[in-house]
Length: 329
Image (cartoon, rainbow, N blue to C red; front, side, top):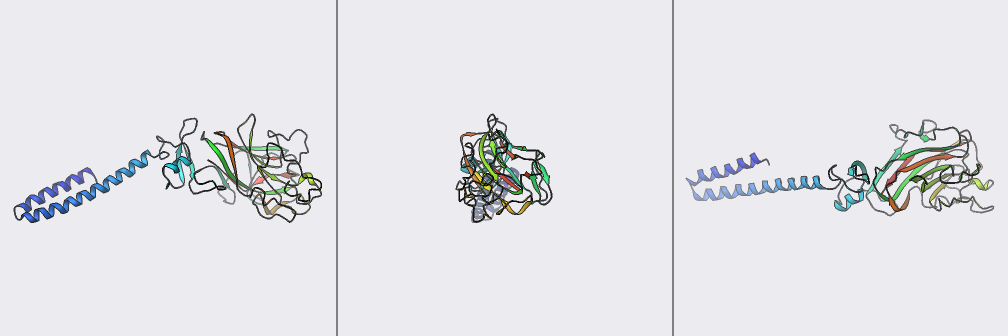
């Protein structure tokens, strides 16, 4: 209720009471009491509305003057906050609007995740980020933008927001003959190079710091053991390829070829989805794909880098993704 409307109502009470007074004292009391209750009700409604607006105005994340430190902080202060855009202030003290997912739970860690990237190429309106090329056949995919061996890189900014956990998933497809961790080129098994046929997720630089690796292997057959997943060669004769020390256990490995490889695009069996493993593979159970969660210590505000890498030319092998989602908390 506006001030003018409230004032008019008060005048109405007064004038009604005065007029009624000349006729009957009982009428005066009844009318004044009824209108007094109406005024009280209107004032309560106006007060509640004003308090709500003030609360919204001063709740962290609701505007650029009161940014929150993280999506999780917003939920702690206002547990009913819906998913959407909120103002967050990173270490650079420059408030930016970021997308907070307030319903998502990742590998047992509750809500309040900040979305860093969400790309779904099954949506025809989606495009690949700069640094990658967009494929339209045989599927809509994001792939490396170079024909020779090496990596194509995309940097995903976190706008200075600090995080201690990363959550994400990637779904791709096998293109011809990727060889997993097997390195044909000596000296390229470091985190700074193309140590894997697959996708590497890191943060920081000089040196990069490993978050997760998505490995694309040749097949589930044991005839070329150095080119299969560590979780594929269950007979272990000879042993599977060594996993780089900086990767440790933080990887998913998959192949689209259950039997001996072919130079084709394997479009019927997605990679890293946690399904479609053959009898000679335990990869669908390793780290429970498709989602990963990695704790980062100490917490950081480093941007996240996604690199698509292979150690041979595109004519022999390539790497791609159809879906990519990255969140931090």
